[in-house]
Image (tube, rainbow over all chains, first blue to last red; front, side, top):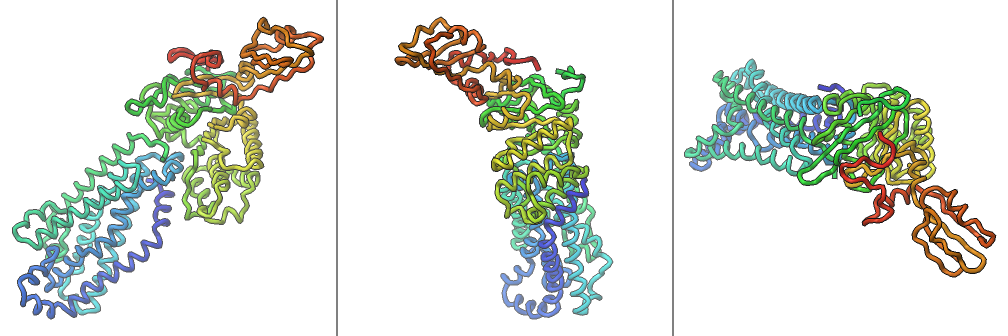
Amino acid sequence: MNGVLLLRIWRFAATRLVIITLATIVWGWLLLFFYSQFSEALRQLANQSPFLKQFTNFGSGNLFTVTGAITLGTQHPLLISLIGIFAVGGAALAIAGERQAGTLEVLLARPLPRRSYLLTHLVAIFAMVGLLIAALLIGMAIGAVSQGLTGELDLGRFPLMWLNGVLLWGAFASFSLAVSASFDRPGPAIGLSLAFLLANYFLEILGSFWTDAQWAQEYSLFHHFEPGEILAGKADPFDLALLVAVIAVPLAYALWIFQRRDLAAPA
Amino acid sequence: MEGEARGGAPPAIATERLTKHYGSVHALNALSLEVRAGEIFGFLGPNGAGKSTTIRTLLGFLHATSGTARVLGLDVSTQSVEIRRRTGYLPGGIALYGSLSGEDALDYLADLQGQPAARRAELCERLQLSTHDLRRRIRDYSRGMRQKLGVIQALQHDPELAILDEPTEGLDPLMQHAFYGILEDLKAAGRTIFFSSHVLPEVERICDRVAIIRAGELMALQTVQDLLARRKRRITLRWRGAAPDLSFVPGLADLQVRGDRAIATLEGEVGPFVRAIASPALEDLTIEPASLEEAFLEFYADGEGPAMAGRPSRDAQPQGEAP
């Protein structure tokens, strides 16, 4: 890992990171605010229609419990977009983007091993994801305190939730980085990375809306990050192990392919 | 190719049958050349000849299909990081981060290099890049200013070997002149400069030796003087009265006689030619100075004929001195 490169990656992302961190804190707070203020009204509304009732199970969450609301909030498209900017977009551009821009060869003309370049980007992205998941949990903690929900939440389980969240988004980052290491242009790298994210999301949502397709959720990475289960003290170590494996495999591929591939002059 | 160059110093660059194929495209074919420590070496060839492929292989961006290459005595396939620690590289059409100021970009690249930017102040002064300029964002730079910044980032840490791809591209004549001065000073300080160029007058002016590459193959590796001595010169003669028969004159070719004028090309030594034409009837004689450009073009002339006389076959040695 290279400290100079790590610092520069963070400095390039600093403004966006600050804005998105603040937005994530607000989102975490909003989850518990909405739960506290509107869950009862929504329950009455949902009871009037089977379709709406099914809709309340969105993303394996449950609008009418605090843990369910948190699960739902962590799988909401808005939060996925916010974290995905760094975990997917940032990782997909890390190599392919610099290749097309022509800046990669200026960097790699220094005594900077390719392995070090790739691992530094991985560490930088993991740290950003870690910050954003922490911001989400901080927002939730603020929401829980401000709405008087601390009795319904075991804040001591937040560290495990943080770890599970980082591993989930780390898996997407690792995949995106592997794709980025394989292409010279950012278009295909971003396209494939987004397709992977959306495919996982689709499988998770499909299963949550349609009981006959619940089996599909097992094949979604999102299904292996269930804050509700963690907060209920029913965390499954298999989820963590699986996510670690999903991080390791693309990373091993990325290290292999990036080391071996030719870096021809940018077009 | 493992041998040492003149003076006992190991060669700065040595390639031995270096080959790079992209599928059916042969970008480099058994390229063998040697760049001596402390010389300015010009690497000539048109687009697609294999210049950038060679440079990128030397720096570890590309992996050779076969053959070997050593830079500063280090193997390019296994010691690439150490090579890059001791070299400075200017890519062709350099791209830098537009959001950074020139100063921040230079600081960043010097930090990554892990060596102090010992020559930066001097280079900025000679290339007329002021403190004010350095504080502007790169996205606001003109092409010439970007190129100056590229030259500075490649040389600021005073590398043993500078590899420069089209270094004067975008520089105005004044800055080109300043750049040549910088290279001459680097050479005087014992540094080696390897640069590719399309600008033949500059190569002719500053290089000690040149290599000419065509379709991935080395066509010539010679001193500039040797290369010029071998090339054909265009001559014009004017006589009092009708021009005499010149067909017997040694080295003369492409003869065209029009009344009192004769136009021809001359290859080889000038002395025998001058002796052969010496006559009171000779009123005027013009011999155009040899230029590298014409020598270069001779290597690229299509078809058979004297222009390609020195072209080696695939397995033959390139003309000129053995590397």
